[in-house]
Image (cartoon, rainbow, N blue to C red; front, side, top):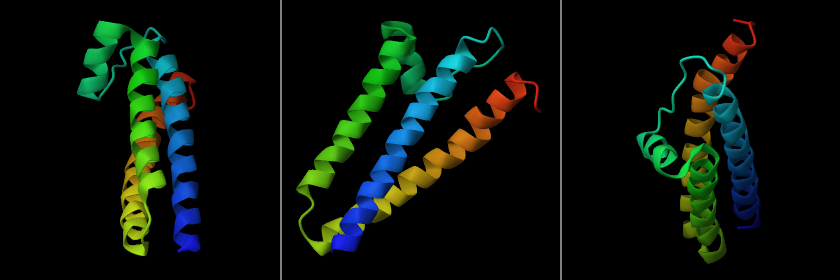
Length: 113
């Protein structure tokens, strides 16, 4: 069970790093003056209500706290397996989104693409 726990912590750290990159790159892209917009409808709506930076920090903070509760509540091997599978799916989906959306847009903005 120790390996599963360490795997979950590594995946959780990757998720936090992806969220930091997403916040940074989204902020750069939205303030670039070009025609970029937020794809997440919940985040786009909250940006209209709360403001750009506040809504990104709030919603991403809620996600991190929500997943943290699962990390602290997992006790059995079965729960760690489910958590590792869920984190693998979330990190994979998030990393693909960051590559195909934000990273490529940042390269386009920098004149590389």
